[in-house]
Structure formats: C-alpha cells, structure tokens
Length: 299
Image (tube, rainbow, N blue to C red):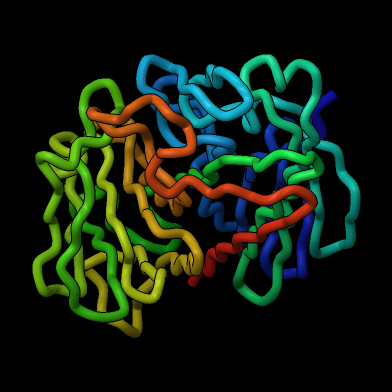
C-alpha cells in the first residue's frame, strides 16, 4: 500500500510517495514550491523516469536480452518502492526488478532514490545497480513541476519568468514531434550567446517540450523577470551528470512549469529501434552501480 514519507530539517520539508518514489511536496515554512497535481492540467507532480525518458518509437525497442515494450517515461513511476532507510531529514526508497517488470523490460535491476534536505536544498540521488551477469542498458531522469507563481512572487504568468544560466552560451537540442520523438533535422536553437531564456506560453506551446543539451555547469535558476536581485525569489537546480534538460508545461495558462534533468532522451524519428543505440543510453556492467544526483534550492 502506498505511503507518504515526510522528511524535514525544521525549515524545509519534503514529502515522498512510496508509489513511484514521487516527490509530492516541497515546502519552505508554509510555502509550497512543488506543483500539487490537478487532473484538469496534469495529475502528477514529479515522477521518476526509468528505464527510459520520453517515448520509444512505436512503444518498443529491441535489446540484447529481447524486446522492450514501455510506455512514456518507463515503469518506475508505476511501481511500489520499499523504504530501506530513513532518518528525520532523509529517506531511501528501493525498487527491484520482478517477474512483472521483466515482461516489459527483460533485465534485472535495483533502483534506489535517496532524498535528503539540508538548509534550503533538497538533494535527490539515483543509484542504479546491475545485479545480473549481463550488461544493463537504461536511461533515467527527473520530472519535477513547480508552481507558477513561485511563492512570494506576485508574477502569476509564465511570461514573467525566465531561466538564468551561469554564463552566456548558444543552446542546441532536438525539436519534438507530435508523437514525442526527437527530431535533429529541425533542431531547437533558442538561446544565442545569452545567459537568459525568457519563458512564455507561446514558446512552450510552439516547442511542446524544450530540450537543451549540455547546459553550462549543469545549473539553472528559475526566477521572475519583474523583481530586482535583492527581492528575488526562485528555484536553483543543479544536475551534474545529466546531459539534457527538458522544460515543459501542460498547456497555455497552466499554473506550473516542469524542469527536467535527463540522462537520455526519447527515441529519434530516424532511430533504428535498437535500445542500446538510444541517445544518452547508459550500459552498466554486471555487479556495478552508478549514481546521479540533482539538487533543488528554494529561495
């Protein structure tokens, strides 16, 4: 049965659902930063993406161990995790492969999600272990959605917000088709020698999902463009080891924006259907583990 686990340091409180290891709440004091879900827009809040990000072309792919058949964003978000370690300010949840998961993803795996709070920062660590004697191919990602307006900010429209980067750069990434596939024949080039990406409903509606590759220093800050620096409230996200960043919202006027660090992306329109050939795929050797960590600081 699903259970909500809360961790806190007295200032910052995070709540996590054992179903899917989904972050359900991120509060500083009484201020809620995380989107709280609404079926009129999007019922989820921050699903864990594993062992795929986005979609497979025709919902399937071939791999060394057989056919993989997975819906968008994979199976982790649909399965019950076990709490294996807990303290007042941290919790570790684990999902292991089962006979049922092997029907759609024919691999053994162990996936841990470690959540911890310190100061004004939530840290979320993914740990993937390969317990088998064959190579484990996978991608993973995060999908947290944040309330618009940000707590403490009067700006109520996405058009009044922007993403700040650590330095000026020129971005690159695939466009996204109506089917959710990545298309590099018509790449997105939304940032040209700038450290800022102004957000807007028109931009989100046109691009569907904004996909950025190799974000400088793997750090972004979501803030309003209507406040001075001394007045600013926002969200800083660090995601070292994640080579892609997705930016998404459900529809124009929707009161949230999702900021999604990814290791890997959806299939490309011209992919060959081989799972191990996916962009960003990680291939973990037997009895090895890998960790990826992201953090969210609220201010």
